[in-house]
Amino acid sequence: MSKNTLKICIGTPCHLMGAADLLESVENLNHKLREKIELKTSHCIDNCCEKAPVAEFNGKVYQDLNPEKLDKIIRENIR
Ligand code: FES
Image 1 (cartoon, rainbow, N blue to C red):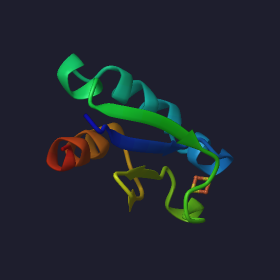
Image 2 (cartoon, protein in one colour):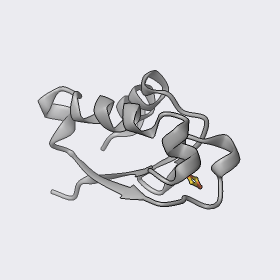
Image 3 (cartoon, rainbow, N blue to C red):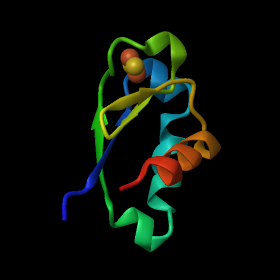
């Protein structure tokens, strides 16, 4: 089974804007969702730092995130 790939940026701007909260929210996803996701970190995604925090899910970049937005993105796009 190929997994969904979630890359969360932990570069300084994203770190300052709450990247740790995003990581924590992914770790707290229910087990069924969490096991389908390969979680990676990055030190910058497409130079989107002005719109931090940033993450990439299955190749698409999402900006200006918070845990609620990321949760919605995951649920709507998970394979
Ligand atoms: S540091 Fe996060 S997008 Fe550049």
